[in-house]
Image 1 (cartoon, rainbow, N blue to C red):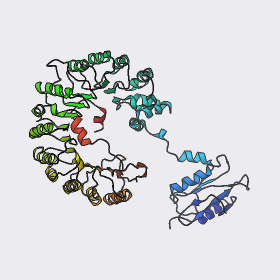
Image 2: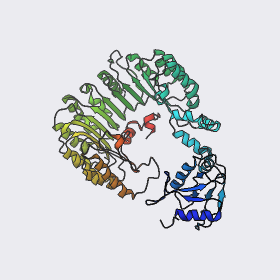
Image 3: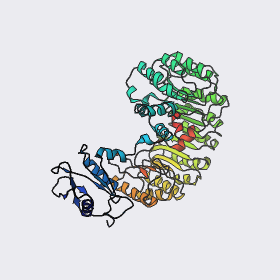
Length: 563
């Protein structure tokens, strides 16, 4: 480059001002500094104290890159105790190599320390902001660095830590209950008790320990419990937190525990039941339900839970906004009850595995006109015409639909799938099990509307269509396709399209909202390329779905906070 002086000119300038230093160009040395693509030159300066010792010393210049300067410093670090070594620095405002204005006598380690930007120099407010983004385990370790960090971290950085999950702390993974309890009561809870709104008790087996912890959390709103916990844990929680907003019960064996929660917590907004295989039978004909209930989630449970809870919700005239019922005998659910409060239902997720359940759902679909998210699992329905009829009816009825998920039987032929593109609000789609020609047609129709944000399928999409989507849809942030014959070529084409879109400019933030998550169905993650505007990995939860499912809740749950 023309604005860079050659190494010979650098040496000549140094010799003119410091004639007692002997400058030698040593091309036979095994260590060399790459100044450009064609020249490898090594500069050595002899020490004043002993002319027989050659010491590497850099002549720093504003015309040399930071990378070059750092490389020279690394070489100098091999001689940290040489007292008479001069480091020559050119005045940055002077372009004449003959004018060497600054010289000082320091060791390489001292020079490195002077040039380093120390995090200790940052303002307290900025440090607190950094600490708040650290994982909780790393945040505790940061307290050990210095007295200042301990005060800032302990007193100010836990205000956004609203959810206590023991699984966040790897060192507790295989510890006994008494160790976990001691850590929670002595270390973690004193730091974040007043901010905590959610806690997961599933890692604890001792009901008394759970009862003790509840006394230390004054603002708890959401809890996760397993039925193996002692009865006093349920009693203590319902007595201390009558205004609790959200509860998830897993592996429920005693339905009395569920009834106690329902009776004692009249302000519940969300009830979740997971893996409850014991039938829900010995209950009164009528039991109270919170009038504020907005979301009901019943997953991998005996069908009696869905049957009784949905019946009681309908009889209590409660208008749900979000309902998820999976992995059960769905034909035993009365969809007329679901449709009764369907004019407010925004999120619905169902498994339809029989002709009866399908017919009942289809007959009531016209009453679910306010749906924003619809998720259907039809893999057990081995019939080609049903998915096609569903798509036609959804496109006609659910005019406010924003996201649609369909798991169909293998290679389902949905001829009218293009009708979904007529939905003005639809910008998020997830289809699995469809013929390639049908899903490609829908993808191209949505891209033409320039409103697509999220598209997942197990079908391999045409690569040209994917690149076109990235260009035409500015809000597209998540795309998943089936594997290509040459995955490397596919990623290269995508990166070329991204370079053209952003003109090689980098995003202003590391988590910029316009960064696109791309997955082409490969499991070889270590071989994936990198790009500033893309994350070649599977995406986290769909924010469109999560917002419809949990957005109306006042309780601050971990996965809702990320929205």
